Image: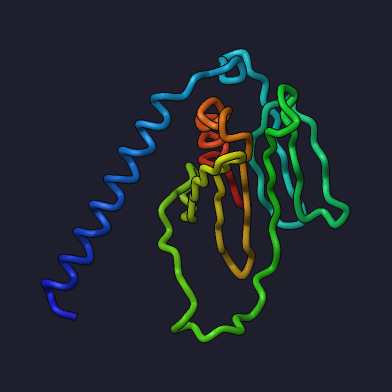
Length: 168
């Protein structure tokens, strides 16, 4: 690859990161706190012993654990439609041709320094923030989801929890 091609590729990445950062700042700046984002908020830490991951969650949310201990769902005390999901699974061997499978560039780093992919999906009815981390043949998934009309109220909360996600 020529020097010009490498510089163009690097410039695209820098511009992409800048656009992503500005978009995140705009979304965060427009969030309202709706009562749950206060200094009085009590936090608990969910720990998954099977896969060794953890993250904070509001203590007044209800936990629903899976039978096989691979994950959990937390339901908001304010809305049954607002949920946080987290699970992990072992990575299966790749059956596809690696040249044709789509790779998504990692665009997010947790406060622990672990890189992953953060995807925000805004739909007509439901919106979500998803964090996907692949590490040592384990796929880690975390998701915050709520109705689209309330998503602006939960964006900062979801982003904060995703940043705090840890792998032991």
